[in-house]
Length: 121
Image 1 (cartoon, rainbow, N blue to C red):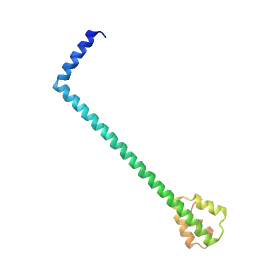
Image 2 (tube, rainbow, N blue to C red):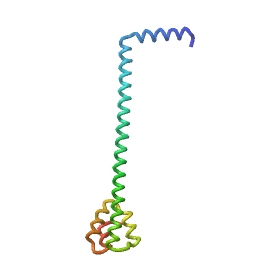
Image 3 (tube, rainbow, N blue to C red):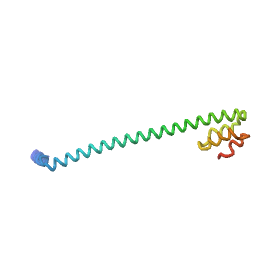
């Protein structure tokens, strides 16, 4: 670009910048950009908090299931003696929803087979 073209562009820019409407539009754009950045940060913070809460809940559930398995194995061994490896495997691989049935079975069943009768393999 020639220096004349640059000078003309600067002159037009100065005239445009002096316009009240141009100044209002620039202010609105600046405010909108600031609002967008605030909303983006708030959304990011909410997503992080939700992710942390979900991870914490999953961790708690996993820990609770691990504790249930440990207590269940101990109860079964006290009730029925040394457990066959298949019975131990079934407890360790049981779905969380089946653990409760197994615990009830450990309390009420008359045999180890009855403990597992109401659960899926």
